[in-house]
Length: 338
Image 1: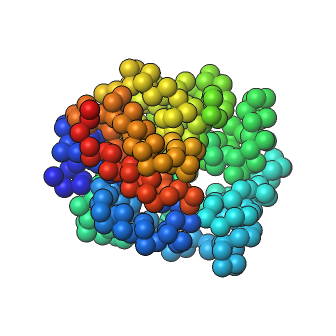
Image 2: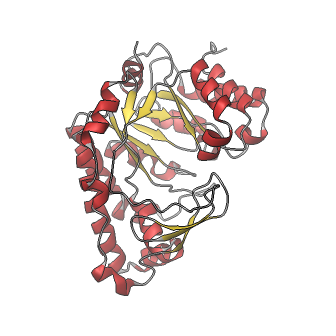
């Protein structure tokens, strides 16, 4: 079975020969633990890859310091501050912190128009991995990056008209973004929005269903019409809308299972969606032992892995996670279930 076939079998519950593997190594790992990272990928080859957009006109505004620490302006016009190597940073100067700027605000269409479709297609054709698009579609998070998180929550609560106008603009941009990826040879299109705290959804499920669920439905329709799969990442406790994400058409969901009741999720949604990882990266991966990791993987597998598919062995490798724990994770996915 090729990697592409293996992932497709997992997504369609067609009994893959093993759970497909995927890894997200954060920048601090790829730079400062490059050798262990490359050794792990040789020992446990990954089945999912990423296609580049080849955007040649995107602005390069990263901080000048060797560790990437400092401030920069992103392509949407907001100012970010990075205080620690290997992390993304946070917005300190939102371009639309004042609604008076909305009427003249221009979306960064160069991020789409400047792409190189041939580069994406070549990457897909040269690999037998299941290839995903870059992860650029994130309407809720983009609102926060543009306006500031506190302002977004207040405007959602008050039903501010300007926020809804901006959300419609962002949605139109992301529809065009997805249309571009759907014309390439990628197998799946990646979407994301972090929706939960450790205990609950960040906004009321009713507001989520009114404002954001229709957007995700539109994205999934485009993706499926092109014969591709929809992959979605979200952090936090998102059980309140898990069923909604499946309903609108998400084929694979990457979520923080250990923030929720894994067994309850399995009872409700096993066989209806592919669980695209993950393992507890707040506690077990950084602070646990390899045996703790093994037991956590076995818990996930007992709940979700019946051999038919519907699971992907994915984890995020943070810069404070021991390499031995990451290796223990992938080894545990190969063990026979007791």
